[in-house]
Amino acid sequence: MNMLKLLALDRFTLLLVAMVVLASFLPVSGSAAHFFNVITTIAIAILFFLHGAKLSREAIVQGIMHWKFHVLVFAFTFAVFPILGLLAKPVLLPMLGQELYWGFLFMCFLPSTVQSSIAFTSVAKGNVASAVCSASFSNIIGMFITPVLVSVFILGKSEHEFDPTSSIIQITLLLLLPFVLGQLFRPLVYPHMIKVPRLVKSFDQGSILMVVYGAFSSAVVAGLWNEVSWQTLLLLVLACSVFLTVIMLLAYYLPKVFGFNRKDQIAIFFCSSKKTLASGVPMAQILFIGQPLGMIVLPIMIFHQIQLMVCGIIANRWSKQNPDE
Image (cartoon, rainbow, N blue to C red):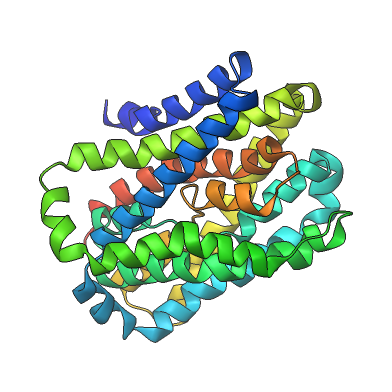
């Protein structure tokens, strides 16, 4: 029963699939799509305000001193992932096509997750303080690094002109500014948030579901499912699975080679092997204006679900081990 529970899709995964199905049959379009996008933008800004309010300043101070830990996680997130994604181009480009490969590469350029990295580290009895600091720092710095990487390796080589400075400003206003305001107002906001954890979680997930529905609606209107076959979709799932396996093997063995202790190894593993859907989809909306957005975000959606299921199983197993194992 426990194994079946671990392998089962969680509610959020099912809701993500439901949004894709809903957008496939009932896409929002025209003036309704414009209004929906405005509401979604406001929801995302509130979401990152809440993220800022959740983050403990004590955890930041405690975790930020562990600089070797953060350097390795940063290297995985913004060096190892992109390098492997670029090296895989001769295989992935003919297999997936240009737009899906762009989406796959965009996924490699994204920062790590925050909530799931911390949650899995906690379950597996790892260094939670460093995980909090590293995952949060990854998301903040990613708001600047991801647009630059996209500019150089994706849109810089396309026919469309792309200004990373403008995108960084938009991402800063939409994601970073609300996050900073959340930190500033944390003493006032956080006590109320902990009283309604289910409401906060529902808003968190609901915001992402709105973005996914809007993105796929635009893609369906533009003919997404005429361009992506079931065979291509299965190949994308296979590519994400193989890629995650390679990353996880590296994230498991390299911290041991560098002499990190058991708790640090666990935290590095979970922080280094994941990519964020929460920040990724809003960034894609800003960075890929005029591009096939549904195909761009499809790889990160699939990778996100695979990483959650695999990390859930691993975290549960490690939680039952002795610290010295």
